[in-house]
Image (cartoon, rainbow, N blue to C red; front, side):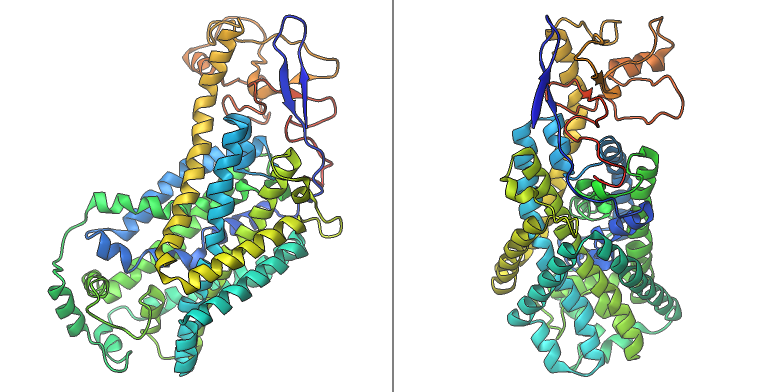
Amino acid sequence: MAATTGSAGEPRVQLFSRASSGLIRELSLSDTVWYGVFSGGALFGFVYLFPTPQYLSPGINIPLMLLLTLLYGVVIYFVYAALGSAMPRAGGDYLYETRSLNPLVGFTVPWACQLLFWLTFPPAGAYVLATFGLVPIAQAANAPGVVSWLVSENGLFIVSAVIVAACWALTVTGLHFYRRIQRYVLVPGLVISVLTIIGLLLANFGTNFSSDFDRFQSPALTTRQVAAAAAKAGYHPVGVSLSHTLIWIAVLAAYVPYSMYSAQGLLGEVKGARSLNRLYLTFLAGGVILAIILLALPFVLISHIVGSNFLNQYAWAYGAGLIHPTYLPNIGVFLSMLTSNPLIVSLVALGFIVGGFAIANVVFVNSARVMMAMGLDGSLPRFFSDVSERRHTPVKAATLWSLCALGVSAIFSYVPSWFTIVLIGGAIGSVIVVGVTCLGVAVRPVQDRVSASRHGHGDPGHGADRPARRGRPGEQRARAHIDERPPGPRRGIRDRCDRLRGRPRLPAPGRRRHLAGLPLCAAGVTARRAGGGLPGVGRLPSAQA
């Protein structure tokens, strides 16, 4: 709901308030680290590392691309940590954009680029779970019929439908149950698989991969045939291309920086989310685990064993349609070529099963919270804001979104031409909404200065930017827009820059810092209700969000 305030002669300011949502803070910051890892897909990202990039962008350097993507994520982590610590509530980008840019923009962009494009991740996760996880296990068990069924249209749809049903059940059961599943099933499964992968790769240093590759497929597909097909397709070795490496950052930017995914809807249920520094380190830790340990390190090792040149040859031959393997080419299959032990193959595949399921599940959790926030603000019908008093989760919103995800899974499975659109579209849509949120953070201080000038407050930075401390009894201005220092001369160039940027320097050390110029209401001036929380978000009891 909305309220207004202002004294005589002052412009009236619209304030946003929100009642208690009924959510409970269930996750610790350590839980949030792993939630971020799974939001980035864990081993799911391998689907974008081979063979498509090598064929479409000759000279791409995958480890360098992952490192640059992580550096890009460092900036994103700070933006979302600052926004999230200032507004640790359900809603994520919807909340940030409606308060910083415009209610219409804040609704439209998250609706189109999140709630709609996130529908692509359940079938994409099911695809990785089936082809990277279940298929190698079936091959190790010598079950070719199961392999053929898993890669068929019906098989992929049934796997997707099972994933949607399981994710829906896990979401509506409540976050407390998901926390246990993550701690005692998903995290151990991922850790065991990654350790197995690294151990397998280290044990195969110096071995003859050509013989392993030649005997893997029946009828045989040999390394010589791959090299001949690549040459026929026009392949020739090239050096590292920085431009082709940078292009793929746009795709991986939807995964590696998404270790901050909890800030896109879940922070209302994270303990300690009010600390900017801790939240930033939480996002950064997840990004390092995801980019370096789970993706870059295994890729470097397998490139050394297989040979970067052979990976490029294979990508070119397969992309040109000159070789026809009996499996879908991916890093997981190459790993299974290094061993014939069914147990090791199963442990390697376990990581892809966990990653595929986890990236499908997290979008169910976040989408339900975003729709709930829209319902609380009246952007969607109040139906979506209903939270189960027993399970403390928005069951109705999660159920409706799950039905939509099932329909998208059918399209993904039975319309092959949509396969690439679904994968790339979901990634790019996720990047767009992050860009709009960052834009809101960048332009808001400028809007505040223009607004201050129009209302006769003068130009910020020249001593006239301190708004009058007036208002209704019991109301105070939020620190995000008020310079709380005592009157006096400016203290140095750093102090001046802070004032020009609308960034207050708080007088007492240890106070919680806020993002520069962070707005929490449409007029750019915020208020804290007596005994209440930040406008537009509300303060809840310590256990609630």
